[in-house]
Image 1 (cartoon, rainbow, N blue to C red):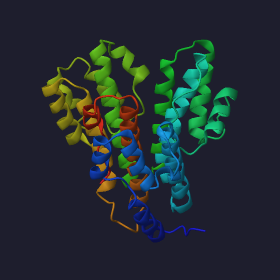
Image 2 (cartoon, rainbow, N blue to C red; image 1 turned 90 degrees about the vertical axis):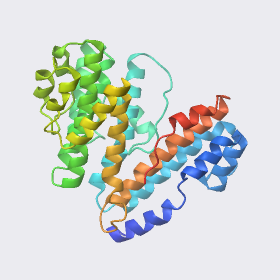
Image 3 (cartoon, rainbow, N blue to C red; image 1 turned 180 degrees about the vertical axis):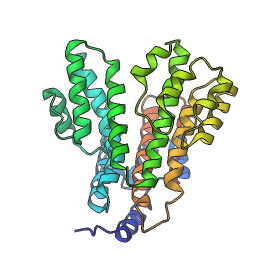
Length: 327
């Protein structure tokens, strides 16, 4: 039985992290054939599937992320915090499952590594019983199901789940300043992105109250008050954010390129930096959370490479879309 201590968890995570694929390994996978990529994964014991074939990529990823989840849940001295980072995968799966139920669709693309197994979430969605989730999230989903019973509006699903998740995360980290800052920053970035998308589609400021998420450092009222601002005036909207400098810098890049993707990239890199800056602090939770992020980013890149190889796409797609590794 693993010890529930920061020192033990950090030592164990350090050992596990030696098997993470680095940029050089991913580059070799990208440059080689499908067979070369699979051999590298097998040699690295990725997914512990020594007989893996070309059709086993998703199975390898699922086994790898499931093993990560089990390690983290066994080791974590603060499961109430590390569970939040695992729960993001469940949120993605719940979105897909509820939409599939409403639209009578078949199987969904599954995001492994969450707190709950596929069967448990499928049962919850089918029976519309979310008791397995944290209580505040379950209540939000119960309210969502009542609205969906009146009007089938699939667009409500992502908004409701993102709100429920962030509300739960902010409540759960209320007494943990570093991780509370993380989720305040996430809320601010996500609300800025929502604001920009509403502006881009000409939705009108009346639409904001229906699509903005929970309040982070930026008061929600600031978005409606600043709706008519020119893009150069958006800095005033974000001035109360816990990450106002980072958001402002991302907005400056967006002005230059015209791409909202600059803000998405800045969000992902900033959130990762909040964890990676403390990766060597052995007597904290940061190494464990960092390992979750590292494995999820590794899986994104492995999936991309195998998909490109399997579909005989141009390898340039890989270099364009690889996500930055944790570090």
